[in-house]
Length: 341
Image (cartoon, rainbow, N blue to C red; front, side):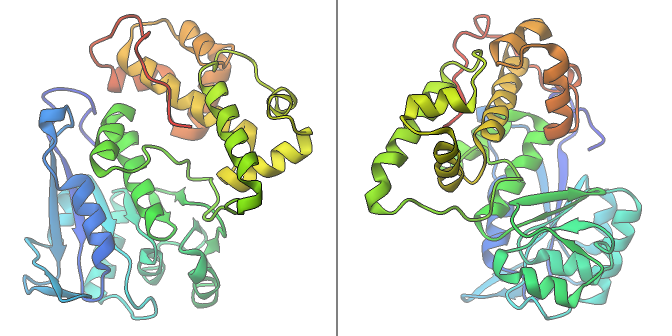
């Protein structure tokens, strides 16, 4: 976004919700809940959310609802971010004026995010040709068949490629929206919005779309893994290994890794890196600790390692992240809560 996130006098971010007949009411509600609610009293920056459509006619939604546009598609030229809801019927072509407006926006390098089956709209516009994308797992084969030029990622929650974001189904749309807020406005802002929505504040985009939940006879293992995650979170500075965490769970390393992935959708080491990045984000936002000390407290060991993981997960450096999102420091970071297990 053109304004500097975290700057008190920065202009509000302008978000365009692209509306046309057949968009999903759930996705419209998610976009509205994330960017259309005033939470400035809780430290969240103001947003300007507009519902842009080809005409000002009310757009019927499933369930007897209707969406009233308040801007034409020309407003996309002013937007800092464009969000496209999914469609109830994914094989129905989006209106050509919508597709043309999205092509123009992408040519201007405006970020565009599509929730769930919204990937079909981007694909219809030709924006996903030769690029990676994700959609609901039940629509993966359909997207491949109808748009063979798209590289469909089968099991991620959300994917970024060339300023285009796509997400998997339903709850993954919330994950993507919160990730976009986190990227533009910091972890604390995203966490505040997540708390008000009573949803998880962070799930990495590389997490699997659906997790094999333990059956009743393995509930004891699930409880053990939760205890191990809680243990690791309170000791992020320690150099944990899979073997060490497996021993704490009373399992062989291979069995531990298999159960861990089945219950969380990711590997133990990837989960640990994600938690360390999240903890480092909070320290960079809330404290004036030197970067080597942030790296030490969050278990990266060195500033170089921390910088590498920030570049991979957030597309920025710890130093630039602090410049963008630094808040008034707390008591040397000691009251910074750990991320969720």
